[in-house]
Length: 168
Image (spheres, rainbow, N blue to C red):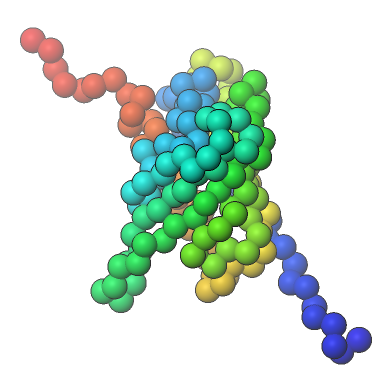
């Protein structure tokens, strides 16, 4: 029927980043700390608990950072809810509840997977299912997620590296 609105297909994707010198058990705490995303996510200035119990499904965080566009800065924010967490598999899933970034429906999962064994490098995998996002094409959206995850991986690896300062 011509009067029916055609539903746009959901976007789905997955990206990953390898941390060659960081074991999964050392990387997982950076991601498991759901309300401290600003410590590892590039450009995110704050992330804090809104309600719920830390580490438990139902926990809600608010994340915000500045986005610059044509010499103007805008505070971009999102409230996200932890919907599942599995410390044994080192993964969690979350959904975006509210935001000013154009997201309608967005659910994502992050997982830390050993590359060879638990004592050697690992991969962070970030998958999502989303309605198309206002102002973005799928390729551009995927590229943003990829660069964000690579930035997170670098920050985590840098934090895990021993200090390079010489001792006398």
